[in-house]
Image (cartoon, rainbow, N blue to C red; front, side, top):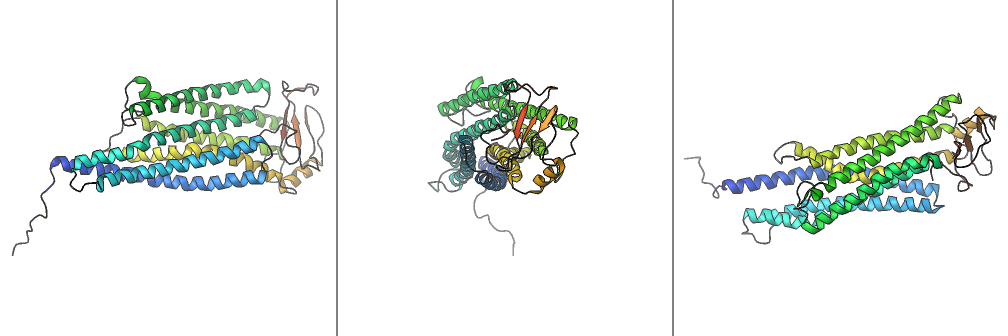
Length: 388
């Protein structure tokens, strides 16, 4: 008795086999990106919850606080929508190929239908990502603006603002090209002219320049502040030590997170490099692309969390940090080239004035004096805190 069995159906032609292989590989590769983006989205949800808690704990006392709440809500809504669109993009592609309207549709027509069903989502996905990029960069610039508080320093903020404007212009060009010529024909790697071809690449590169310049400016301010603390011969930062180091820790966290974000953002260059669908680098392409979709909203939200929690932790009455500061200073610190004023008991507010000059007579916005509200609390709006 022969063990040979007749085939159930005729074998696929080489062309049909190639179509199956290509579409199947694409679905698996994109699924890897979807899974990783879902992981990033879960992290974002945690950070989003922390951001809402920090804003509620700090209280909405001004228009800037209300604006930050709006930014946090918008970035999360846009990132969540972008994730949902990416998932829908994958499902529509799979459905168009595996479940066509007509069972007798050829494989080539199924591939075309799969592409046509998911293509309309391309422009909304691109628009959400790009506008997340602009809003996120604006948050970073606003943070630098709050740190560089004197008129003499704030002119340097025009550098990242200029980058932001250029990035916005090329984002508008990119979306115009996509809506005018169709997403498939006018993407970052294929288009009708050089401007459309490179609009997304230029906007990404300029956005990287925005974040890099902001990180450098924050690093300069952190270096100046740490040099000042050393000149005051204060104890090294630690638990129960001087609360002026809360500012030092805040600047350090903003600097470190900015450097990490720049490294992550630099990985997005792979999206503008031709990658073969038949190479394992395509998995890296999809993973980094998913990372870029979420980190554009996650990082600005993380900045708000860092800033707000540094304030609310130091706002706690009777905290170990406050007790340590009072025990170290004895309630007040002597005057001189750097004078520190003791906490205002009624408002739980500590106002610290640092003068970088030998005399203590010059005041005003053009002076190098920097008044920082460390504890916050009542009367914060009447001061000029380093962060709002």
